[in-house]
Amino acid sequence: MKSDNFRDLVPYVPGMQPGFKDMIKLNTNESPYPPSPKVIEASASFNAADLRLYPSVDVGPLRDALAEYHGFDRSCVFVGVGSDDVLATIFQACFNSGRPLLFPEITYSFYEVWARLYNINTRKIPLKSDFTIDADDYIGVENGGIVIANPNAPTAIAMEKGEIVRIIENNPDSVVVIDEAYVDFGGETVLDCVNKYDNLIVVRTYSKSRSLAGARIGYCIARPELISVIETVRNSINSYTNNRPAIEMGVASIRDEEYFRAMIKKVIDTRERLTKELRELGFNVLPSSANFVFAEPPAGITAKEVYDGLAEKHIYVRHFKIPGIDNYLRITVGTDEQVDIMLNEVREMLKSIHKMWH
Ligand code: PMP
Image 1: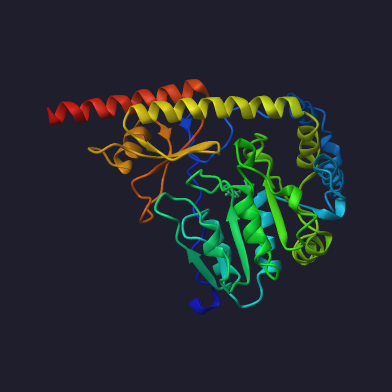
Image 2: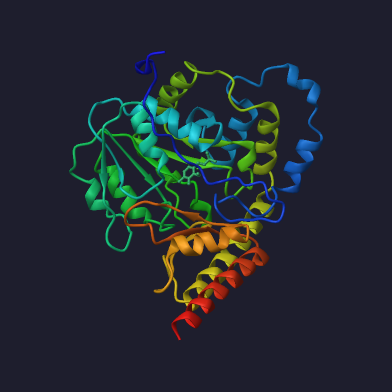
């Protein structure tokens, strides 16, 4: 067969999903805690006989629940199969001008993949030397759209709301997408700006703060005119996206605010302890507003060596072989117990290096 029949693509590489029973998995920013008991109840009482029917065509009950929860009309909400699905649909629907799409050079690497898939020109903007995003770099630059993860990944650093608003205000002719996958862990949302700016799309996910990565639920909120453009693309590919059990679980999760807040608090408390202890071990840890930390090991050991040493013990963190961040590790905040086991292994590694030196 001729090879020019096929597209030449470099796909996104997600974190490993190894199958070891004893593993500690701190590599894909999942929650270490189960979803709300209300979600578990909804899943247990789901009537599998209903699976003979297609799900509702516009994710009806979940869309309504999200609209009510965030205080918007349902015409402002679009739901997809994880925020990856929502983002991919937005890329296809909104970045068609031929002008370059702007996003940070170091950010969620799927943005680059979708841009290539849909033949979107890009211009990647370097971060500042402290890994922060400078709003001024996104102002007065010709573009056909802007995507910013806030907090950013994998740096975990959040941008101030006022800075994001400056970007939105100064690019009135471009769609500005703010990917708030991690915002519940300490970032400032711009959801309340959606009614004011018709060029803003805020993207959210159930995968992190709602402990539902496996259910694949993401959504975005924007003015109805933008939502209908996104919906048109969706309905030109696949009319039935989220499945029936996921829709019910998604609604149940929204109904348990108390549990949601409690789990977020646990993750934040553990993150602060993890940050402090890594710093005591000599790591450079960037200030995190997410459910993970981004950390550079002390002199004498590289990120890759720490990664390999931990993987040998079935403890998985994430290491990116990307210039500029290849001596950093992205470590998801686990339970206190998981974090302690990981820290002990790191401590042992550092001890054996010191022995070699002295
Ligand atoms: N945005 C960012 C910044 C992410 O880190 C992730 C997680 N890989 C996603 C979006 C996608 O998450 P999901 O598809 O599970 O909602």
